[in-house]
Length: 341
Ligand SMILES: *Cc1c(COP(=O)(O)O)cnc(C)c1O
Image 1 (cartoon, rainbow, N blue to C red):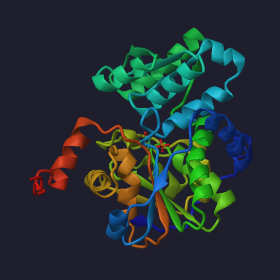
Image 2: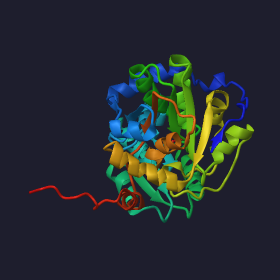
Image 3: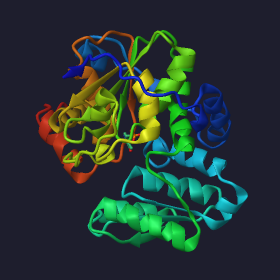
Image 4: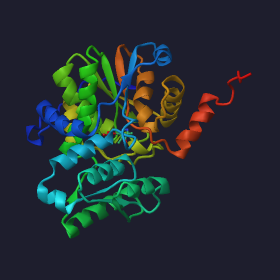
């Protein structure tokens, strides 16, 4: 399903500071801490897609996901007073690990509020990185509200999962590395939850590769950003997706202000197509991806107009038990003949 509507016009937002110069400044901070990630193409994947595909590997980041760039950028942008007091957010996933990792590295105290039923393994990962974990709320919305309350009560800075310029700029550095190494791309597919990664892709593309199309990919079971992009109005749609990194129930003003004027196309794929792409990453690209990390590949495979050379971003490798089990089910693991003698 490809949206080919004319682009809705959003007002330019110079006050948000989201421009290419800011991406370059952010990269100075990010590249001091995180080495450039590899980007490869794989013959079997090219053959399957029918076009040359470059896979940018954010699954090799220290937290297993690209969001650590946003965390590092955010810590670098804090005032001395904010650094001393610390930051608070609500998340069970890669955003939480990102802030915990970056906070530990720059000695900023990090508090993460998680809902009561959050997966134990994810909570353990955040704690192991040194963050204070507060278990509060039945849903992520309630946890976010509690994080806001903690922010007020303790005088610590609230970090929004979507409306943070520093995080968008941090995520943009994925695409700075990609476009610098791979000039001549026809299209880049970026997964969308809050839209911070895709917005970062647009900022860099506009400056370095104006002829390249940036195409967002979202789960059809959590399509808030897609609806907001099409309508030009904020959207709230309850998320029903299994794909943790894409389970976002509302659009964000900041990211939509960029996507509205710059995103070329926006594809919705269902959760089964995303799971198939997790399998393809395993069998055709030597890569363990989580669902959100394979969503850009799902979008590429669903795009009838795909043209090479193009790029996808494996944004994360933190597959949950369901995604791991799905790989062996979908890829026919166990059917290979044994050739040992
Ligand atoms: C958060 C996340 C996304 C979605 O990124 P947004 O910036 O929220 O749009 C995609 N992939 C992974 C692995 C993520 O953790």
